[in-house]
Length: 349
Ligand SMILES: *[C@@H]1O[C@H](CO)[C@@H](O)[C@H](O)[C@H]1NC(C)=O
Ligand SMILES: *[C@@H]1O[C@H](CO)[C@@H](O)[C@H](O)[C@H]1NC(C)=O
Image 1 (cartoon, rainbow, N blue to C red):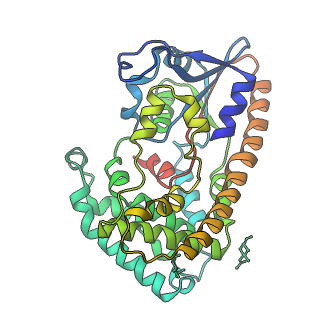
Image 2: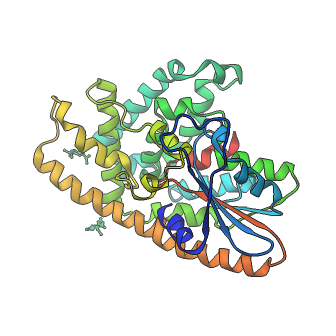
């Protein structure tokens, strides 16, 4: 989350990354780490994590960051990732009120497109699964059921996020814990006190605050993007490779101030790609209208997921620093912008 990091730049000292085995791939010799230190004895650290399989970034995490983690008595994450009730609370938050189903909420043609897309995904998924996933017993049907099970009872905005998680790159990255989950497990094994500073509801409910027009717009748009990918008229718009590279090279400025600041990347990406999309089922007028609606949704989510959330988190962090004044603290929060549904899903892996 951008502002979180921005505040850290003001309050704390950013630590230079010490050498790791792998950093020859980066352009600059001296990398910044995603570690900040608040001068206090015992120290308080802030570490910016990323929601990708930890194996993609682990070797690049500088030794001084690892040492800070090892030496801290208390580790705090956004959510309690080791608690089973976290997953339950999330499913509850995603569900429609009792008695309603998605079929009643969607225009018939949108519902039909959704079903058609899910059928396609189910048929295509076995060819997406990697041999490593197979070795772990992670089959296409297991993953499909974990992500899409009970979709008829989910809120439209969560169906939209689910569609984004049911894509080839996202499916192929499952089965290895994301960095925060890995750290939470390590902290548990090392007998540290592990805590959370947010609740699932606080992270989830802003999405439910979008109204039905906005949610259907986002779902329609996401389906349009996926339908074009299916037809081959659009390249897969989201790839985490770029993000991982920037993270591994300690490229903070482009993570913080880069152009990809949208909370819903697929909404804007779909418009930019219209050049090579000859099938033009979207007229220019639609695109203009779409942009207005997309940026309205984006503004709302930025306000809720970044600004409001930052203030709330900052208050709790300050409180903890004061209350645990004789203990070392390590806060591990997401450094990447945007939100993907698989963030919390991956806790069960
Ligand atoms: C949804 O919110 C937008 C923006 O606030 C508003 O223009 C629109 O009328 C709302 N739609 C419904 C159905 O409430
Ligand atoms: C989906 O979006 C397209 C393009 O903006 C629009 O023409 C169509 O009417 C939308 N469908 C629904 C069900 O909202």
